[in-house]
Length: 335
Ligand SMILES: *Cc1c(COP(=O)(O)O)cnc(C)c1O
Ligand code: SF4
Image (tube, rainbow, N blue to C red; front, side):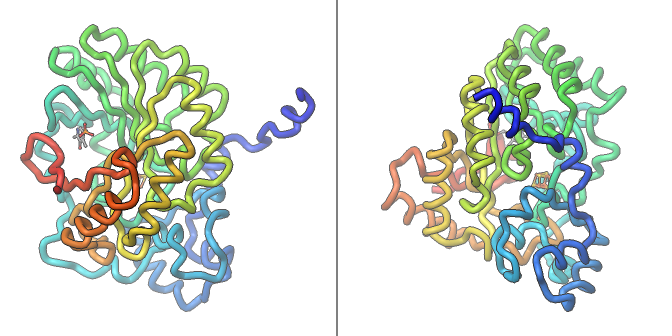
């Protein structure tokens, strides 16, 4: 046993895999055997929002298929360069709800910390693709004021680490952040919103798990998987280890045209998540961010898909269809 465990120990660290992510559109096309004709458009769109794909995620894509649902989430396209009315660069008006830089307080009881601007993957539909991360995360000297604002508001019982992707931070940084939060009496729950366990499951290593097991806070991890083909053996092992460390696992997905806008795919995603120990939480209608209009699925189609899921899955595997409405006191659940 111990011999085979040693043989399976990863020789490449998650930090190295993060650093080795594909960022050159030519490299992406070449690795997947895709036509070079896609390159000029990919370069134009990547100039607006850089390409970024970790190799373990790329390995789950089918070669020679420009319509692969995982590829579509990361491939820069000319459509991103078109401007659409009704689409903005800050669709959720987040610039307006920051009591201090990097802290978003929109809903009762919960505060969201933009713990970092960095992500392991760049999702082309991301509503934060225009977000001024450099100015608005709680790195370095900004952490003090954000923690002071949380400490001063006894209504905040849950702190959500978001970004960017908070699991791109080192274990040391995460532990320091959590230690400060655990010192605040009224904070009882730490929630982490991360795409890393899905796109780079190597992030869930022994050190991260040891930290999570010791954490004196209830811990919720909201994954972000949009398609069942994202859940391979490595992801399932990472999720099983997280669950064993006492973490509640939920998933949020975004309803994306050409990726998961059909009932079979969404049903398979729910079933695969459940088999891996996570429950579906939210299915988001796309936020209207410039550059993502080609992913939009009409609300009526979203409603029909959810009705279809209700007819074939147990209630706990049907995600809540939601839209974010600036100024509302919660996400808007569409029924
Ligand atoms: C989505 C979000 C939350 C969490 O909302 P839940 O409905 O509890 O998942 C909290 N704060 C902000 C700013 C959010 O965008
Ligand atoms: S914030 Fe989330 S959705 Fe946006 S690019 Fe990063 S990982 Fe993708």
